[in-house]
Image (cartoon, rainbow, N blue to C red; front, top):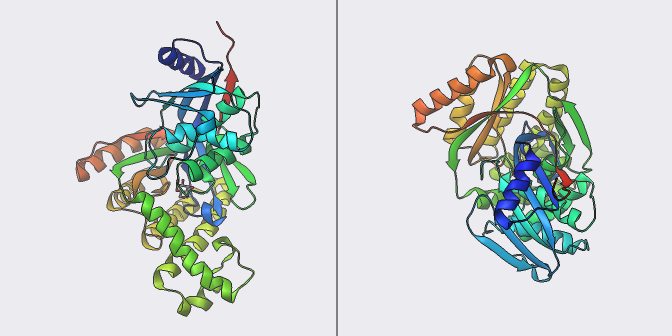
Length: 391
Ligand code: GLA
């Protein structure tokens, strides 16, 4: 069944009537450029064909009623009273937040019945939460009679995640989910938000491998990394007033202030500097279809995330180690925030299925975990369509 029929059917089963609009938005995989987006650096993600489906119909009474295909509970509220819940975000914050962000941006949303179902594995570092918020931002705007440009959808979805859900993420996930282009990875400059779409080479394939690990510390450690970098940045700014964010730093800057930096701050900032450089080099490697250059950049990224940024874990390291030893490997690394979740593997397309199976078996044999390993494809960003009743 086509995505819009599945969305319509989900909505019908939830509310017993037809939706006015259906939407879907991509999860994302990041090829390289990790923990750089909130430093206004460079990232290289692609929206993927693991997606979130959603549908909505307007209500005249200003109520927002949310049903999710992933949880039993129904959430009801009113547009006028939406307020960030504070604390650890409950599931419905990700669905309600977009309506709050739209209201704050003076988009005149009516009430709505909303149905959403995430088909992106939850909490796996593939942007399940961003895809929910992107799909619902587009839907909420459509109910208000506005077709927002994808970048504006991404901006509001990020406000929802930062301010409604209280997650201090950068811009990468929402931009990838909203602005993705089928068959392309997007080199995104997180300072200017300029996107350079680069075709993903036809002969190559992408495998995402779930470690099966979800660390509860991920949220607090993510915020801690930002603080550690801010500490180092304050020192750097004293010496180099032209430096605004870690994106402006060079290895020479870091060498000259090393004595004034604590070792942790030094390592964190070194990761950001070297990762931005690897990300830009990876764009060129992808354009040249230079698999061996890409493999060494991905290896460098994983190593730097593990040693300097300290966001890996033994299971992610193991997936990378197994994957890079398999035939057809063009490099692997952890993707997303880390502390568990998924690794991304670039693979020779002809070897992809055998690679996926071998990775699954060897990881299972070493850890006892049977976790999903999927071949994914760079896909388009958010789609939102009106649905004529009776169609
Ligand atoms: C999470 C955040 C992103 C980004 C990555 C790390 O996915 O949501 O903004 O910071 O971690 O690169």
